[in-house]
Image 1 (cartoon, rainbow, N blue to C red):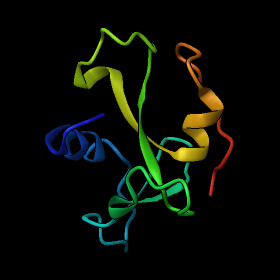
Image 2 (image 1 turned 90 degrees about the horizontal axis):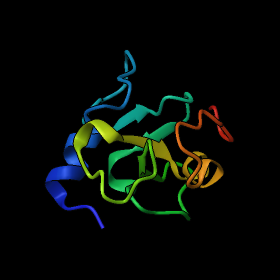
Image 3 (image 1 turned 90 degrees about the vertical axis):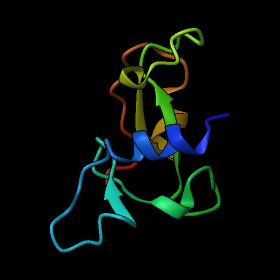
Length: 89
């Protein structure tokens, strides 16, 4: 489980969208909209999770973490360096 500091740092990596309040709304690298308050909520259409790029549980560094809509995170699973996008908008 990520701590609040890590969650905030990963959130900052999400894409800002012109016209959107970037403190609340952004997009993941697949283009799926995510809501900051929806972190970890798989019942929300804006829910997101922290994805570990190389899937190595020992590599807990920030550069190995990205924000992904929960559907995209689930689709990628533990496949290292996967770019699979289940949800794009």
